[in-house]
Length: 461
Image 1: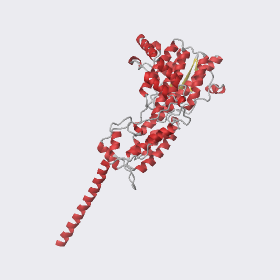
Image 2: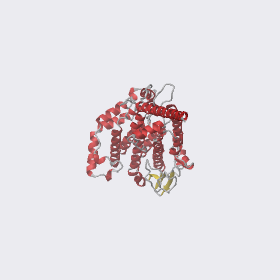
Image 3: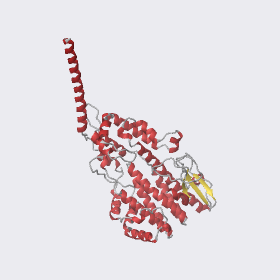
Image 4: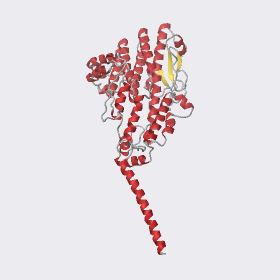
């Protein structure tokens, strides 16, 4: 009995020691996670600047100095005009017209700088970071460019309403080039900002064509300008520069342990997730710790991102109708790739929205070019073409614009003394020209996106 009791206590003691040992290991694991710091070995910022610099870089062909001058001297758009860029001048109050004229006079030099920047093929700036990371890179002059673009659009429409259509279209062509400079950028944010500026231009061009008697030569010239640029627009482009952002995030978010796979660092995860964001829920510190304890390691995460990146490029090349036909979405496709990897999965819906924005922006541009071609054809022949294919045969268009929501040409109909041009829109159904809002971040709206007549499309803008 004594022997048995002695053995029993030895077993109990051994069990207690095992529990304490396991607890100590777990505690050390937790403490090491709390104290974990990344090891920064690669200067991805320097690599980013190296690969984004144009191969044929020439300071005299860089728009950057002209933009620096523009944004250093530009006068802010009056508050009363910041929500009026979609209006036609006859819809503005007298006080708003006065404010626009004052703004234009104050920004005469800035408008000249825009014209000079538009003559340059690229806008390249060596990027700097607030904290050394890729995430700390700022994109210069975004807010200023947005307000300046609103002002240019209003000014162009005002000039057109006074019969100065040539000057109006010249301003819009220059503004479009400022958008092109952004569109050619290496980050998705730059590309989306550029696309937004281009869309402002398309909307304003269509408004001028609808409201004014524009001479045939000016219509042809504007079509030629857009025809030379629109094929260069590819948004989103998942470039090597964008890929470097992820590599730097992994470098800063995971430990780098010799002989072992790196672990996700709770402090890093908490700092980038604590406030949440678009499609991203806020994350508390205890939640961050729990995620890190169960998260795949650095090597597995890097491999997962490489697969994710290739999948992004594949999905960006597929028009919405193809995914709709397969009863899937970009989010569904991407979610299967990043399943179990919290480091990437929160931003999946953002990529879905960016890809959608890209297709809509492309359609905006091609539709505007088609409208210019239709009006040029009428100006030359006295009647509208029977089809968009006829414009291709007459060399007014390089190709028939295809609707990404049905895989067929944009709907073109002659209606009496006018015509209609529209996309079937995000409900993938031809509603006969019934307009939808076509919001950037809402899918499945009922209705079509009508580009012409403008008075119908105005409700969408």
